[in-house]
Length: 437
Ligand code: SAH
Ligand code: SF4
Ligand code: F3S
Image 1 (cartoon, helix red, strand yellow):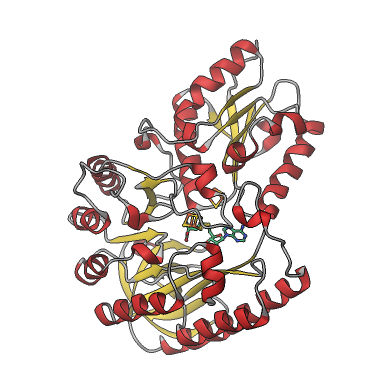
Image 2: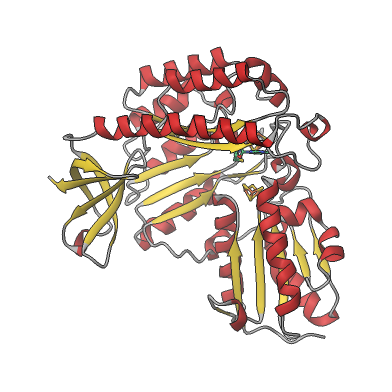
């Protein structure tokens, strides 16, 4: 027997999907009567919602959890959730005997049950299903933001890129029923939310796993665009193969759908793309980008890149640099390859030396930084639509454009939550600075 916890602390690592899962767990725990605290020492229950995407992500949590073994008081319960829970399973208990439960990404709905088990039996409990079942109550999510909300539309991934743990840590693709998504978005609109970001490892696969369902991703956008009060709809992430013409038309035609597409190419060389199992060539990718630019001329693009994939040569890397010269990305996340347990790429020799990976990372980042300076300069003098999100202590208003650019301006706090037009006159490192039109 253990004592029923009265308070909890939760820390999130990883992506937006994990952030949303945290918000759902917070909702569950608050319904159970627990109070959320923001200092670990004050909590009866500690939850670490983990990420496995790169080795560093895992090492950070393992280090943190290791230290807790020394500082934990006997009353405290410790839970590990998220992708590392699925990737490591029982191995977590072996390495960290002070952990009380391990709960996988597909078992968020079981949190209360698992807590009951731990409390009543006093034994370590593990639940890590390989697939997601439609049993999660999203409506109880406790969000910290009251203007912008993440909304899950599809879980899991069927793509099996050879470097990636996600298909193993989140399981196969399962789309959420469109009516449930509409209900949640309507509820958010009623609460005053102005912006939603639809989440999935690959949002464009939405609906394809449900043969009886006629709702595909672009159909869903048409349904959600009609919901009064939601000014902006964003979505993350899109696999280039599944980006359709119908989606491009939806971006062009639906007022709330933002003209920003995160469209990760991962690498510029066809040989590496093939080895990554990305199932497109650079030429096919360029064709999609050209089509998007033709249909939505003001669209901006984002990408993710992995440098130093096994066998990547300088020539291969030059092809990645060349992609950036051809496509000025608005946002680019550049990662160095990290070999992951259970993935096909682990079997290949991780043969690009760390120093070379770092050098490629720096060269690509430098090129992108230069491009984003040019991009921001090109935005000066023209009014941009900004959703005002907050007011700083010094009285500055902060917000973002439809294409995800940060903007600061002067104005009254009463503008928070409204759309205004701001003409930027200058910019610094990350942010456009302007005046309200
Ligand atoms: N589902 C999304 C991305 C999920 S992970 C998509 O396919 O676009 C986010 C990013 O992490 C990936 O796009 C990839 O660039 C990077 N990533 C994934 N596995 C990695 C690994 N083993 N090493 C380095 N970066 C990795
Ligand atoms: Fe990972 Fe590829 Fe799936 Fe993205 S599409 S989550 S990179 S396997
Ligand atoms: Fe990490 Fe899992 Fe997200 S591995 S990036 S938390 S899907």
